[in-house]
Length: 343
Image (cartoon, rainbow, N blue to C red; front, side, top):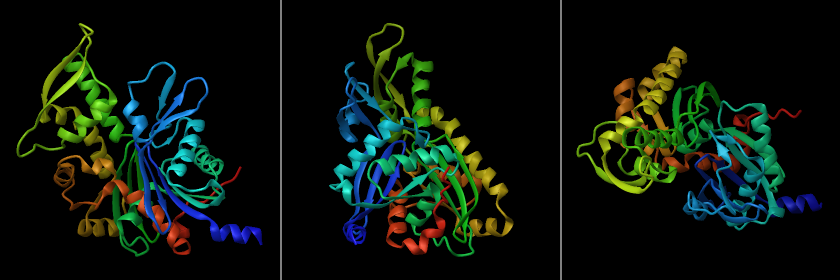
């Protein structure tokens, strides 16, 4: 009786536990949390100093007693304890009592191992969930976009996140062909950092690199190329300096990462059964994730694949919206959830 009463009071959550950003969807409320996946802890006590946007502001600016951690790397948990703390704190931000958490649906990359799946499940359970379900990131993204995943029609989705790029061909509630490559937003940031080090002997932080990518980064020439000033530390003199760079140079820095993603898309298309490939020719490829917002990426992909490319509406939230739809129509979508193998 008590268990039934608890079920009536319980709140179900959809969580997009991303390398760059974490989002929480609450049934009947929508997206209530959208924060960077960063946590700042006191070095000695592991007491939470800041989380999300506040912790991001501290990146590269902390003293020795405060440690900023990105608990996820390449789409999977790199620091188990910090991830658990982060999930717990994000749930607090959503104003939800841990006692009343029911189901949690979390997305994971399609190339994840059983051990990594277990780590995600355990983190959510220890944060207060009574029931944890995992769904492939590309599948959640397709549901969030509103694609008809149950029809015998081929849908291709390319989700470019922070740690991984997920490529999947979906039909009849299943993933027919998938690829998960660890080249995405973070790798692009690293490429920009290396570019400045190699060409200008300038050391810049990851936050600066991301800002450059978002403001002047592009996949193809722009109608009007953009200039920007970049501040960093001179590796020769050791003193801060400012240089001016153009969007042409940043495009050159990003080219290898973009080409790797496009090659993975082409390889997936080669492996796709011909009937589904013909559907994709008609329907095109849907781009989701933060990487979809890179200027002219759709035009570059269209040129390289000769297929229609569509950028999803609000690509950053597609995955968590998909998790939310699964929760709200659980019986309908139950078959798309990853099977749990308990050891």
